[in-house]
Image 1: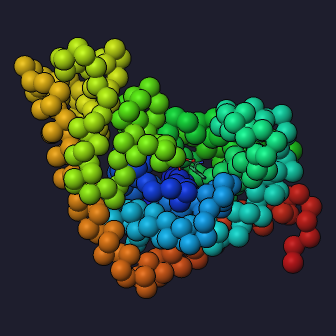
Image 2: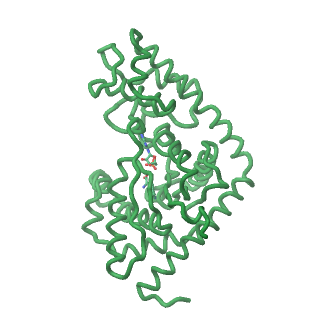
Image 3: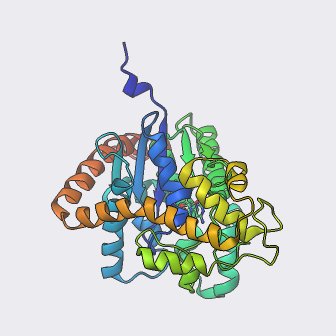
Length: 335
Ligand code: AMP
Ligand code: TRP
């Protein structure tokens, strides 16, 4: 009889170490990963090769890569149960990415919204890595025959492309890849910019008041939440007409696991100042233990090294198996 472990469905996801992680990354990605770890065979990757699609200072990249790994663990992702690794430690990702690039079209890649937005801003000087970015992401996902890929809404188009590339490869050669499904966390998990609640909270924003970082101190969190943009209506409703207030309610829901209606009814007759004070306290209560664990983990580089080394070993085993199949089917001579 096959063991249960082999029958578990596979999950792959990753975060780029290209900036300090935000509350959006935590509530929209990492916190969900934690809840999926018992049911699935999970590969959670620090995608450093994706981070270098834009210029990174080498020392910062090294520091952030370890910090993201530490945040995964500190948030409750168990390194014993899951495969935690650094993308560049598994060369199969780069190799598969080239093989898939040769099975992708300029047309489909130029239609990616994220690329179009960036190329509009940067013109001719846009990096070729940004163009190829979704193919590397497809390689990440397909190498592990992932069934499910937890991503935010902004990544759905890239996931669709991975499905297209996989289907094409399967049809051109023979069935090789599992066609992955996206898994978008339910409402409440898209955290918006605190200064402009019409766009998502992002670590690439210039004004730090737009976002909360996972590692922000309690004082900073209080200040940023108190400055969060609301409206002049003055009543706490969960409504698209009040996007700033809606975002604060969503933050409570995502942390506490309660519904917006529950939050709204507990604030009857209260004002924005009360709501903001509580939101800040709830965030601080959630992040403080995570921050403490991150600091502890970062002071024990040996332990982190053990985790990412054994993670890379486990990941390489699975990835190389798929890579060899791809090479063989394409017509490359096995060594
Ligand atoms: P990125 O920061 O673009 O590397 O995103 C890493 C993961 O965090 C992806 O799954 C995103 O969808 C998720 N994420 C990033 N920002 C937010 C946000 N503001 N709200 C919810 N999820 C987010
Ligand atoms: N592109 C994703 C992002 O910006 C990060 C990523 C890279 C990813 N490879 C992946 C996410 C594979 C899910 C699966 O958020």
